[in-house]
Length: 349
Image (tube, rainbow, N blue to C red; front, side, top):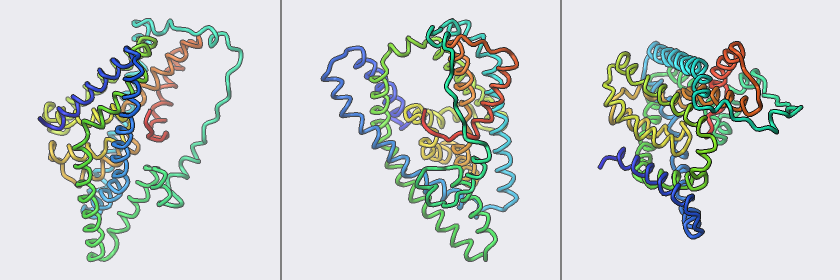
């Protein structure tokens, strides 16, 4: 049985068992879940401990082993795809979210206390200039310790580019060191992924046991709309991979399945990076020069699904407050949420 099948079985088993525990309401079962829950957190920590050294070593290795023109070409194409795909999901949500919410009657849900509230709390977001300044970390070590991936990526890219300007023997030494670190970390990743079915089971068991089916029923319409749009956005990627990447949709689906399972259970794209790299190399046979540059950048700034969840969520919350958003407001919302995906930190939600 492949790792993909094992991970998916762990995912389904955890959800079913968790919903069963929530429905049963038996204290002994809830205690058992309480003792199983740390296994999931330990597994996530094991994944996360590999991310920082993996991102840094892969970026440095990819940049120092490639020509600068190739790095610029691959990086430029990646950024263009990031922007284009995020704009696509934002447009999809802006055009379809309101009709779908109306179809599922989710736009008719209101909370009287919210709808009749006379005041709203002020919320001040950090200014864009602060985010821009923070892209270059004053202390890269502190950025790594804090998990500030985007500033760390910026420093690492600058370091990698600088390494291409030193003498050839020093550049080769840096490249060998980066490759040695990345290959060693990937061995650790293989050990962690071997326990993935257990970790995914523990995570989804706890999640389902804590939420239960009643929570799903309370916001069923909202969840249905988000799920439909997310599935549509995911399915669009398969013909794009066929048309522009030359990969069969079936092969791409096999590579994505364990990554999607890890992402679903951890609710973190960053945590899925190790298995993403594993599948890109083992299943898709992609060149390491490309994956080592594109995938770390992707988990740092590319949040493909975020506009959908945020736009649908905003429209749903607006209905709770009895606020109607017109075409102009919805268009502004879509543009703002698309930009926000590159601005906000990649934290589990």
